[in-house]
Image (cartoon, rainbow, N blue to C red; front, side):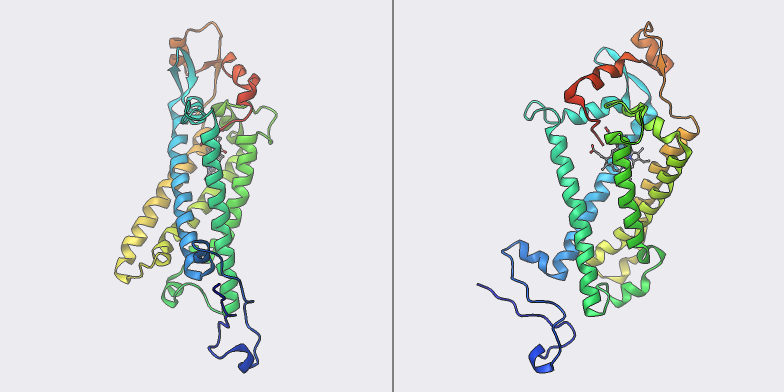
Length: 301
Ligand code: HEM
């Protein structure tokens, strides 16, 4: 069995000889590959990779949400909001290999694991820094840090609070009596028509993009790419990605407040083509979803 000695981060002299208490307690080494996560470098890799996965989700989610601009389309012989068709598509991913909704739950599990690991690696790296009395970032990186880097912790906390509210708001439907499971376009428009909620979404998404900007900038460092010659490129990539997400995500509450994205119900007598033409849906369209237990949750990205 491989036993690790207690590590005194400030001295190479053994704790017994120096008379100092070790800064970290002796930890049992975990089996491979879990032992990689016990080192600071391993934690940085986990923080970087989970961060990239989460940015990938945010981009995919934003692109999916662009469907709210497409309004009503014809689908399977009836008229439906493209946003709702998309949510249904996500529920049906890998059907019939897996039952409906199962793959979506697998994706959600992966997403939640990434969020937990991202926060845990940040937390334990911060504890290591405090214990060692230095920053886990290099001196150069620390000097180069700006408003974004110093606010990572605060932006992270607010983004986490936003995600919790957001899921309660648009997935669970805990914040409104008008919420209808499966009626994504109607739920989004109802929620973001409220200027207070829309304002919160805007502020949280700005902070998210500040967080992502610095995260992308420092991911190179975490993955061992330290060449100062690529600083411009790093800044360019970080600006492009966070700027794209900012424009996309802030556009949704702004467009809804401005009335450019709507949810309209129309006369049940209108034909499918007329509903598409008028950009409205026959209200009975959602009842089938909300009455059906298998759709008892609004699901999708
Ligand atoms: C203004 C921007 C955003 C809008 C309009 C929006 C819209 C939505 C909607 C409509 C849903 C429910 C989808 C459904 O039930 O089919 C949802 C779910 C979700 N959103 Fe967002 N979103 C936005 C930004 C974000 C951001 C920035 C994040 C993460 C940082 C995020 C994370 C999530 C998560 C985790 C879910 C739950 C997915 C699930 O469990 O199925 N969203 N969002």
